[in-house]
Length: 127
Image (cartoon, rainbow, N blue to C red):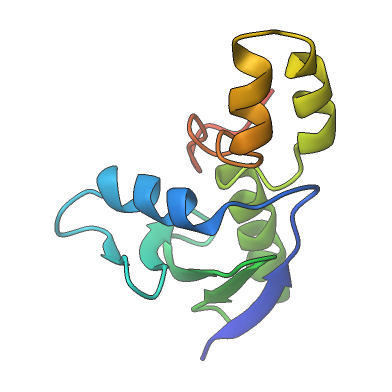
């Protein structure tokens, strides 16, 4: 049985580049990505063992579907997915930090939300 949740980001979401980076970094045989539909499937660790999750990256949010019936595991998978996709970063604050920079400011304004998940790993949560 699977469970689903809508994960809303804290700021802008750029679905095309997010799906592309997941596809580009997918481990063959372990992860599946459909670039056209922006759907990515992989295993994530839980205290009870690995569980399959699928994320559907939409224009304003991420739909998470996880193969678990356990409430604790599902909560863990929601938290892990939010960290993996960096959905809790205040992208407005990031943009404001670069806004005055003559080189980076225009790039950040043009690609709001694109850098939020480039360095996150689900097994290496932020400290």
